[in-house]
Every structure is written in structure tokens, then in C-alpha cells.
Image (cartoon, rainbow, N blue to C red):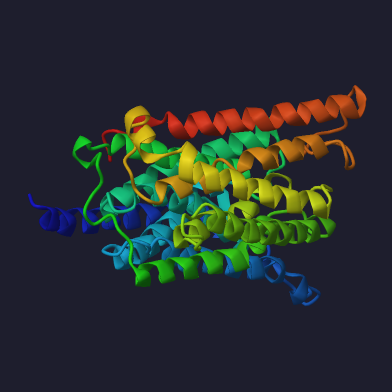
Length: 411
């Protein structure tokens, strides 16, 4: 069966089966939450107190990031721009639907039903972002069916990791540096291991960019840059925590951006700016501050974190994770976005986590979310916070990178 015939059969069958399963699950388990249920409203209900007005602005911003930002960013291949955008559209809608149900069972399930509100959609979009970051590591080597299967596997794995980390390890990861970026980075690397083909070790003739595709990709970077403060602050506690998250994200992104331009000019032999550098490392500041984005880390710490994250991402992308080393060690083939995926998603997290650890004793109580006061004073709480974060780091890394038995046959 040739590839066109295979896609003509497999994609409709997979989508049809998925839609039937979703109809069954929605009919059996999904209902409205209290803010969307007309039966729970009365004449004394103030409509402006509905959670819609609190959550929808962030939902709309993250929507733009998912469908426009990631879509344009993944269009950097000269011969794969249209497919990158369209496959992003397909994968994102598929992943969000699947995440609504899977995350619903872990986070919004009570009285025998998943209670659906805008906050569910927002959480589902965060899970979708995990899939799209991993998509960047396999772009150009996967069919739409393989991408949907990847989403089908990654969403439950991510939901289990997220539930275990938040419920048992109980860390504060408002910007998703550990739960989202780290997990997605290493899951994408694991998929490239599964899809390894020795014949492509020296690259592919179509593995090139063009002026037009680079412009489209930079547009995606700009969309992500503009809406990243909403991404980092959407799920933080309302009030001063959310206020700090927006401030720290913007400061981190700003310092990361100007650092990226400076580094690009310095390390270019002709002293010119390189488009790939701008696309790949300007967003590192938003990832770096994510682990401590709502904490009392101070504005100058956010600025320094942006510089550190950008620098780590820049040299990781250019030197530390040079393609031939990956081909030999991890059987990960050279696709231009695998290194941004790892550098932007994985490496900048470390400075942010370290800063979160060092500042954990600066605020009130502990930054391990949901914990009660612990014996031993601030010293004990501080070191418990460090242990919490590194335990979450280890768990997310292992779960994402070593889930091969679940991916090998299906992909």
C-alpha cells in the first residue's frame, strides 16, 4: 500500500474511531460546571462574577499561541511550510479534545462527571502545547496519522505526570517549565529515537529553509513572544501572584531578546544577525522564569534569568547539542527544530529552577504548592522545596524519555 493510499484510509478511520469514542465519553461523563449550568443560576446571581470573565481572556491569548504562534513557527521548512501549519492545526484540535477528557478525569471529576468550564479548555491547551513542542522535534518525518497517534499517547502520559507531580510532589510550577517544556522536550527526543532511520544521518535535500519560510517562522516567534505573559500567568493564583507572573515574564523575555541579538552578531563570522538564532533563543527567557514566575524573586532576578536562559539556549543550540553527537548517542536525526525544542524547552529550565530553589524561603511559608506548615522552620521548608523540584524534574524526564514501549509499535 503506497503512502497516499495509506493516508487516505488510515486518517479517516482514525478520526472516525476517535470521534465515536469522544461522543461516547462526552455523553457518559461530561457535564457543565457550576458557572455554565443554567440550573444553578437565579435572579440573585451576578453574571459578572462568572468565572468566564476571569478565565476567557487568558484562554483567548493561549488560543492565539497554539494555532497562530506555533503554526507559523513550525512553517520554517521551505518545502514543508504549508504542511507544518496544517498539521499543527489538525494535531492541536485533536490534542485539545483528547486532553479535555483525560485531564478531566484527573482534575475535574466528581459526582461521577467531568465538570466542563473555560478553565478545562485552558488546561487542555496547556497539554496541547506539550504535544506541539514535541512536534517540533519530528517535523518533516511524520505523517498526520503518526502525529495524531503521538498526541494520543503523549496526552495521557503528560496528564499522569502532571497529576502525580502536583498531587504528591506538590511543587509550584506556574509557567510550566518543568511539567510542560521539560516533558515535551524529552518526549520529542524519545519519538525521534523511535523514528530513527540510518539513511538520513547525513541529512535530507529538503531539509532547508527559505526567505519566505523564515519570515513566517519569525512571525510565529513574535506571536508567541507577545502572548507569553498570558501563558505563564494564566494558571497562577489571582491577585499579586498573577501580577508578578506577568511582570517577570515580560522582563525575562525582554532581556532574553536583546541578549539573543547580541550573541547572534558576535558569533556570526560576518557580524550579521542570523534568522535561526532569533527564532530559536529569544523565547528562552519566558521558559527560564516559568519555574519561579509568580514568586518574590525581584525584577532584577527575572532580568538576569532571561539573560542566563538565552545564553544557555544559544550555546546549547549551536555547540553543546551539535547534530553529529546526537546522531551517534541518541539516534536523533538532524531536524532543525529538534535543537530549539531541546534548548528552548529543556536547558533554560535549569537556571529558573535553581533560582526558584534559592528564593523559596523569601516568601511566606513554602513554595511547594498546597503544603501545610512544616516543622523545622524556613530552612527545612527551603530544602524540602529544592527536593520537590528536583524530584519533579527527575520524574518528568524519566517518564518522557523512557516511555518507548508505548510508542515503538504504534509509531
